[in-house]
Amino acid sequence: MESYILEILNLFGRWLHMITGIAWIGASFYFVWLDNHLLPPLKQSDADQGVGGEVWSVHGGGMYHAQKYLGAPPRMPEHLHWFKWEAYSTFLSGLFLLILIYWYGAELYTIDPQVLVLSKPAAIGIGIATLVLGWLIYDLLCRSAIGNNDKWMGLAILVFISLTAFVLSEVFSGRAAFIHYGAMLGTIMVANVFFVIIPGQKKMVGAIKAGKTPDPIHGIRGKQRSVHNTYFTLPVLFVMISNHYALSYNNTYNWLILIAISLAGALIRVYFVARHKGQASPFSLIFAGILLAASIVVAAPKPAAPVSGEAVSFAEVKQIVVSRCTACHSQTPTQAGFASAPSGILLDTDVQLLTQAPNIYQQSVVAKAMPLGNLTGMTDEERTIINRWFIAGARP
Image (cartoon, rainbow, N blue to C red):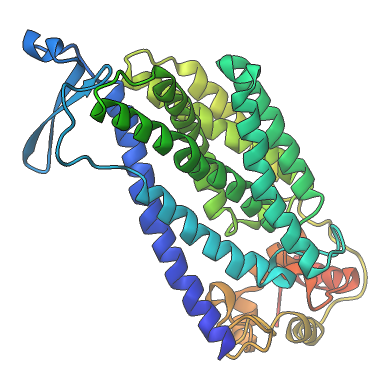
């Protein structure tokens, strides 16, 4: 029953995280687009009231007229919408999933004895430290002299996230390293909203209500953090889906692949932001394409070399699969934490085993991503037997 409850919580937690994430990212992308499409106000009266730009748009059968004030409007409107709950809900649902899957189930998804032998409390402690220290170091960089120069700040962030990716890959399983890296970026994004952007906006609104001129520093800081959030978005989205693709994280150079794809995502975002302004250059897209191509080459599986020896019988392979794989990949899994077979892959019958032969070979021999964390202790000799059987034609 515990496994069923965990799976249900996982399912609806992911659904909620996706819904809130779409709301947050959608709003963020829209305002970046809006800010970069503003034109000078047509009416002088609007300009006299402090309007710095406006844009007309059409959507869903309706016409919209958005205006942006350079500073403070003449008076505060009665209803002012704050864009913050989308960010907070996304963070809380993501943290719930991190705790449920990678901390509560650390022995399944986070700890890999082949990388580093860790106790469950130690793994959880490192995970928490990654989120907290990630934000503190990033915030310190932003508040330092480096933060006053966009180019140096970008370089500092690149060095920081590269070191983080490398360290995590030396501590956790590849899958957990990717997820904690993405969780750190997500934490930075929501902390930017909670600690910098929203407090700054509240101070500006408070000054306007008090009849004072708002301090422009709040707008400058908020804009900087919003821009950073924009560039973090695509790398975080990649990490969210990476757990489905073992060749990306179960690789000797997984941290380099992660950084290359993060850079590619940021460069793609650079291109679209520039395109909004009518200043798009193909170079950022070309460089992003080169990084993605390099990642594909590095992540490409190295087919296991055929091993000479006596022919392997189907019975030998079946025995290995039964003892090492069906604890999870069965109609009735016996491995704690699984109420149903991962990805719906069943290996109970001969027909199912033969049908999944390419998948078994790919995951257990080429990628060596299965069994998960090698919980069932599949040996190199057993992987060699599967290799010889598959190369010989995977016959029954």
